[in-house]
Image (cartoon, rainbow, N blue to C red; front, side, top):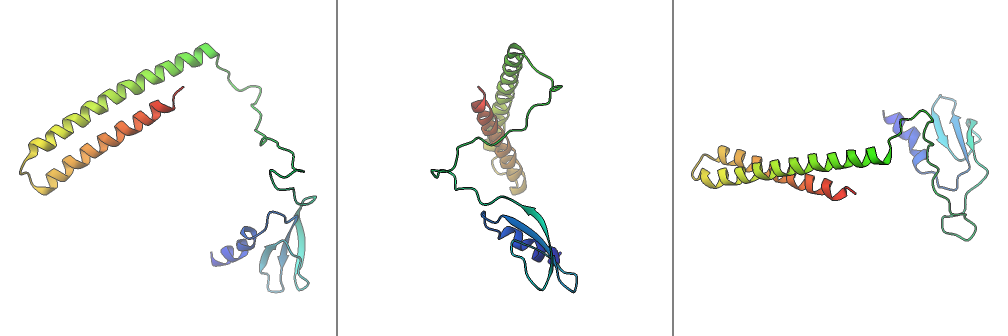
Length: 148
């Protein structure tokens, strides 16, 4: 494992302008990946690019969007109306879950208040239950906030 980390470290340290990547092996068989060819090692070219690209935002750099993977032709399509129906169903399900979790949180809050002088472990269990329901409520609110 140590050898792997040492061998891969030069890959992490490569500058963005490196245009050639070499795989070098020394006399003892140790492999090194680098952007600099060394005389004492047997090196082979792994990849070579035409040269460094101009920095983003510079005058010579064209602004392009990252190329997305095209959708396969046989990928199932959903009509706009079908998607709206699914979105409506999803919102209804999330609203119902939010109402249920809110009720459960309120019950847990009430149970904790009524616990009084219970043993510490029972009180902690009630606090944990309340915290779980409160986290669920927050997560559901966040999820509902991301819907269109």
